[in-house]
Image (cartoon, rainbow, N blue to C red; front, side, top):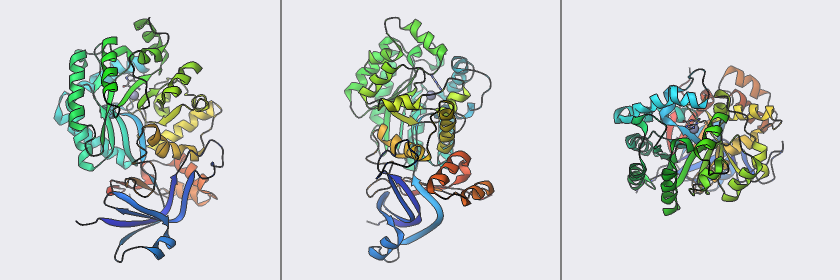
Length: 440
Ligand code: GUN
Ligand code: ZN
């Protein structure tokens, strides 16, 4: 057997624990090597350390060394909630959630009856994700099973760790997008059999949100979720006030929006609820108790005028918060741009987001909340070799700003506020170079 082995020399940053919300990270949370070495072998990280120390100790002769001095390597970014089928309706003007769904989103998702279209958009979406340093995402496909086959096949060809699922929707949507209780479950089961646990892929059951599923469909989804503890679940919760009124009308027997999902057994440690803006203390406590996570989607929440997510209220309850783009409601696929929007939302709430917390969130924080931290989210021996090579001097402006940074925290914050796809020099996943920025 041949070994595929190389070493990258760069500044390295990873997290072993939550750094907290103070300006100074919690002791022991940050792993930082100013002149570091990341040794990768056969798709995994073999060793990480100080370059001089590692070079003096144990490197085999002839090992390829890639010199990235001046650049910063972090674990690959994770996006906990995104719709690949909405890539081409990003930046659609003038609507809030329910009208945005009817006027832009549903017509667009109807195009995914075609395998050819789904293949093309899967490739385009993954190209864009890798361009911005995102190596893993939890993805909504459309309600058409072929949209899921296309996405998983494209992800598998690239060796990526991806979660995805077929949208379940048996009412209140155009005819070409709705399924029915039996058909939706049968299609989900077929997709699970074909893709769940294959390579680095995982299946996430995907009831769109309460208004587009009957109680019978939510119940059947809950039964399927209970049948296999390794499945994930993703849906939307309490994003928009018009949505809240509609849910109250449709489910008069539920005491609040979250109860609709609880009554069908959808709230568990592998469940992601996108948005969760309009919640009370009690609902947050119930989510925390179940170990679920809220996907904070700041650029989407600002774009659709949905509201200002209360990150502190969630953290006070030890409720997991993940970071997500929610494209096509979101305005940017970049994790850096998501952090920038999260900082802006935080400022409006008097809860500024530190760069430490932001970069932790995009990497180990998201990995843990999604139960993926055994394989991804850290630079550590044995972990999958998914990482991003950031260039703190990628543009003239960034170079000017980061030249004046006195601390790593300042450089990280500058990347979070001024960075974009240009700041991503390279993206690696499964030990493979997946993207290299072509200098302009
Ligand atoms: N709620 C139900 N469907 C959607 C969707 O596609 N995007 C967003 N942002 N919210 C939703
Ligand atoms: Zn969404």
